[in-house]
Length: 370
View (cartoon, rainbow, N blue to C red):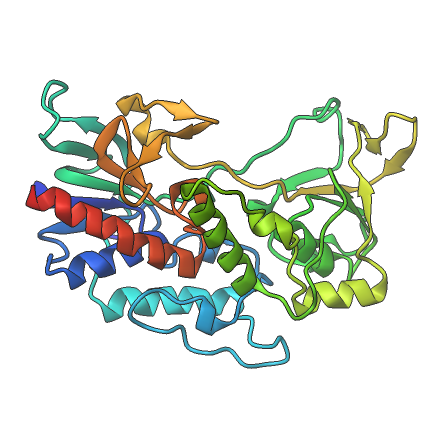
């Protein structure tokens, strides 16, 4: 793929061309800024869709299309026996068409290597976004690189002695790859439940979690989770408490997960304490042979490109504030979106990214006017 050269200076540089970056671009354009001239979206991938093209084949959203849309254009419905929960490829196609629909002119593949201050003694000067090809100076930078490129692998004793296959969610593709093998699926979230549901339909599996999985009622989906996350953030702002998503449960009962329950495959065992050459073992001496382990253990924010700014952290996250709670307190010219509730309520979801992007853009426009 031939990359298009970058403009030397822009008002806003958006790093990441996935759902959060596209939603931010939509609102910047709606405010009158011109993509490719006033703002630029940089994406490391060679194709549209953010992280979605790299996710496993059978992945399903756990909200219907009507509640999984970016601003301005509703995701086309997906109506089949899954109650309208769109599959991965439907989401990829939607994001590709969204990008084209609004002529957002995402520049790819541009891998951002760092963001630096043009002058350390000038708090109003530009930030320099450096890539392997070109650099661009921006008055404001919005980081929307997500988490998919930073899978989290927990450390357990004996991991280097296990002779079977170990892979993370990012490497898992389809259940048929494990036919005839005993597979341990580790992780009690939605990813773990969906992968377990798929693999258990074709081979022998064991589900291992740190705590007992909590299932939502069959008629509750991601819409309720988003509402709970939003209510919790607002409650914290008001100085009150709210259980958030944790008060509802963790796992949405999409059709494949319900099918696993009906087969009797949706029972989790407590987490093991160590790995052995042939499997996993518990502290009481119990041992289980397995041929493969799929670690569905989550991700960390992909923020290596911001390291040179030396931003302060609280509870392991960059300290954010401002009107939208997305502005780096140690570098107000920088905003973060799409990394979890700490960078915008549910902003790592499709609908949440759009709502947070709207608030981010309002703050960015005020900064540009100043």
